[in-house]
Image (cartoon, rainbow, N blue to C red; front, side, top):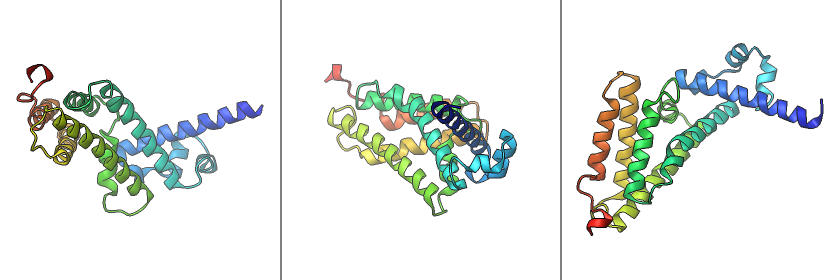
Length: 208
């Protein structure tokens, strides 16, 4: 086997392990991702599973990064094309609802599950989840700041509070969808998003 073919095979093996870890973690949590279970599901040796990563924690981190990339592609990428400010916040919430109710992961929002699983457990995985969620709330807060500056949201609006509430609503939609199988989860989330973004009473550029 040539070096190029060998590298390609190694990358494919690593990708397959990560995909299996993401599926497993989505349903049962990142702590359920063990070398033995992955080896069994992939029909590989334990050495073959651990080899590309070194430790179980590195597999968990790789699965988390893969899930983050999926979230970025499903939520941020389409919304980033909208005009900064209120329009982009509305696009984010719409894409987020699609992501939460669209069976992207078999067990619901991967990050919401990881946050609940690791919120009280120190370590690299918890730190990675925390960094990701802080970064995302920073994006939401920035767009709210732009909306205030443009007069699309009231001047007294607290952008940090807007970011916090958008995130909280998304978590509620995920729970309603996954835990209670609420058929109105998306509708309830959309109503809540409209309320906090003051969409009905927002000042549009054409009305100023």
